[in-house]
Image (cartoon, rainbow over the protein chains, first blue to last red):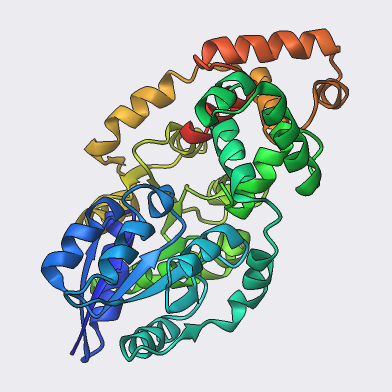
Length: 203
Length: 203
């Protein structure tokens, strides 16, 4: 019997997906939202966590990073299987950075999901071929970590001065970063750079 | 027997949700993506369309508007049941404008979904109480249609000059609109106004 914890934002959809997984005789499934993921993983002690990466919470403070840390604690870990959208390389990269073992497109069939769960439960890597191009894009992310920090603050509506104070930089340096970001993303201007990066899921 | 068409972006989740609905003896369900919604509704002739509003495609050219038009054609219509998120009044408002009969939170239970389908199939209005606050917010949308057009172009990265040309306005008028938008949304600046409006699902 493989114990599975499914992490997804909305109750209706995670209940539906859990029902689908639970039809398999060898899979026992529970589901929770991102904010409840770490706590539930402690009590449930699953072998596999299936996580939906298309959520602001997935990359937030109680998201994939904390769950991954919990996963590699000494008291019995689990494997991460990430659900991602083919057109958004950002969340895919985050799941890869946090040592997910499996990667499945949200447009895959339920059979593929079940197959993926069984693979990662055995500690085997599982990658949906339809995500191949997404991985290519993820590996080509043009921005540095520092540029991403600047861009994230800009996307939240912070002014140049606010970004400078927040990151202990001069206004001129922040302007230089914003110019580099706009150039590297092929954007027309700052707002366009934010839009392009949000579409890709970088910020 | 009630024929239901479920419209949702990703194959995995719509298959899961359809399986859940299909467990009911009186419901017969098919599912499709937004781009396929109108064509499928023509061949399937459902009594109820359950539509996920949290999708860019839902408000796009082949989205809720075209499906709603098809619904009110002479050759036998159907009722629309909209799935929406409580914190995003924009999609809720769009579903209301396009004459959806039912409104359900994506955090509702599967029982509520099935109940909602049966209600709207009989032509009865069905509103999830948890969406009440969202409706209040939707009714208080602060921007005019013109301001929304300006904001949508700005959110796509268009400059003041590009917005002016596209809407046949002067640069000064576009600047005035942007100032009004920033003030009305309580934003710190233009980028912040875009962020606030995107969170609410207005653009």
